[in-house]
Image (tube, rainbow, N blue to C red; front, side, top):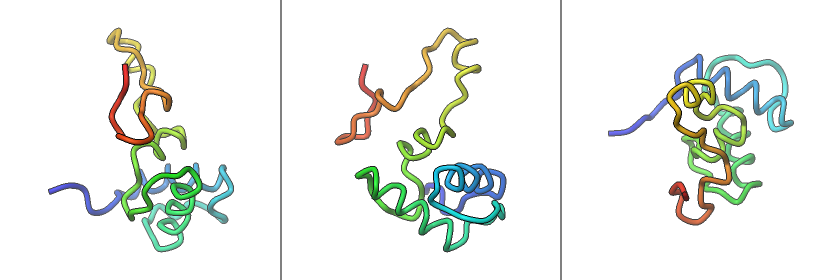
Length: 94
């Protein structure tokens, strides 16, 4: 059925990146609260992406929280970059 909430560890990572990017102030609380949702919506809107409550995968990648490059490189699979995601379709391009 899909993810409805963000777990505390992931919320902390997202908040830290939003703070670093200037979209959220204060310290990371680890809770997916209304301030975090608003900051994420603004970040996504500023990049021309959807502004639903659950973060867009492109936003997660742009915040530096995408797939771990070290694990991808160890398997020989190239790491995904922001340029691999089409802004219109959301599908990877190769």
